[in-house]
Figure 1 (tube, one colour):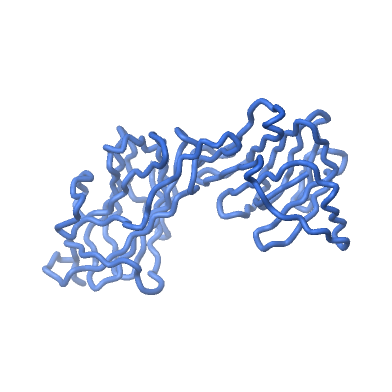
Figure 2: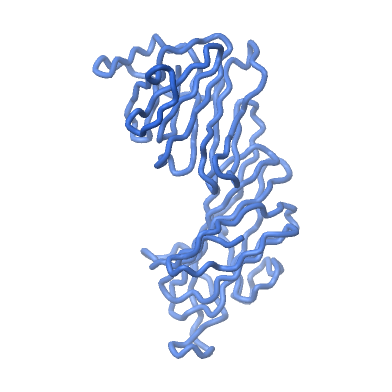
Length: 318
């Protein structure tokens, strides 16, 4: 597969400067130039996952100058035993995909040159292992060598020292993972009991996005009565279902599925990321919407499960 690679202008001062050893002159001939400055940041997608699930990472590497980097590579520490499972396959803004090989617990991406002021972005996924936390130890370097320079003593390798990895969360009310298939689903569905009164799932997720769901006593949010929106908090009897997915908004609807042990919701309260309260009523004819103008709404299966159709994540309560 090929990575999503965008070379874009660097914005602002870099938070981290390290030395790099490979440079290009303006004529393209390798010369002994002053040390190059570069930075690397890693963002977890999402920050926590269910143990054994895929974890995703957005890796951004910026050349802040003064010299161009002749060849840039990204590798992982295969000793972490986290199999690479996904690399975003979109080309960069120039239509040039960087060659990436996720196989045999080893990731090797080759991006070619990275000129001053440019940033390369790539999204990768790994199957997690272990407990507590998982970190594949992603390293940028200029040699293409395996992860073999933990001290970065030669200035030709770079890590994000601030990145601590992905939390592996065993709470039965929680589910989280990075989606490596189109239309992915993240679900904590289990047998409903007196202690497990509610299950939550989010589906219809785009490939390459992370998502988490949480319900139960630790899922907390606040409802405020609002007569202008016909929001009466005392009418809500279910638990909160908190959904975090992707960047928080989507161009096509996602589905929030909530299963209740002893509740039949009349409507749902949704808290948007900007703090706005939104009332969600049943879809016309109790039929899934076919037009974006019908969103948001929910359908009821007549037994115990509601499906909410929306473009946004956040806390939901019925």
